[in-house]
Length: 119
Figure (tube, rainbow, N blue to C red):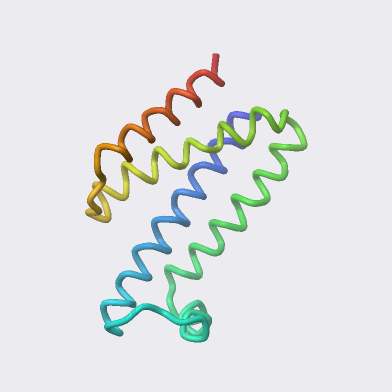
């Protein structure tokens, strides 16, 4: 059960991160500047991907709360860091972000740590 909950946490966290980043980059390009706080609040109510990102964050939050109620915190927090690895990979290939060698090494180290937890 803990692995299913962990998968839900990681997948929904990554989806939320990707949706937020993608939508905010599009909105900034349309507007020609970065969002201020009030503009961001307005955007949340009108941009479908931001609403979906918030739903994903809520699912992730409740799945994580369930995970820490059934598994050790010393497992749940480090294992959920797998989202950093997937975020890095998907940011590079879906969002076309430049990911330098230091970030790849960092993602690899996190992946190694998560692998150690699985043993």
